[in-house]
Structures are given as structure tokens and as C-alpha cells.
Amino acid sequence: MIQYDKRLKMNLIKRLEEYRLKNKISQQKLAKLLGIGYVTINRWFMGKRMPNKIKTYHIKKFLESKK
Image 1: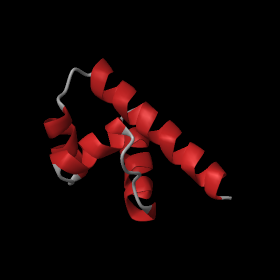
Image 2: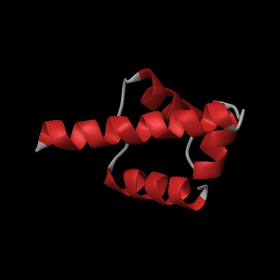
Image 3: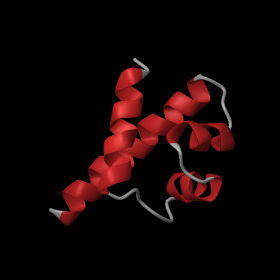
Image 4: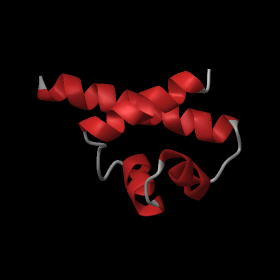
């Protein structure tokens, strides 16, 4: 279960990074759009941290709204 959850979050972070690069926005701007700090999003992209359940939910909603 833990590995499965981690893989889902890693995939979500990958999709978020792809969105950021495709739309040519900085990590700082993306962090502001998500309502989180730059350091937090940077740690996600560097693989140092993973988003919690609440942030995971909001990232999914954010990406769905941008399709």
C-alpha cells in the first residue's frame, strides 16, 4: 500500500512538473497558483518530500482544471 501510494504521488508530481514546463512558468509561480510555498514545491520536484493527502487532492483538482 505504501509503495503504491508513493508511486501515485510521484506520478502526480511528474505531471505537475510537465505542466509547469509546458506552460513555461517558474516553480515560484506554480507554488503561488497552488497556494503553497516555493520551498515546498521545490522539495517535491527534488524528491525530498511528497505531498500529503490534502495537497495531493488539490494538485489533482488543479491539473484536471487545466486540461
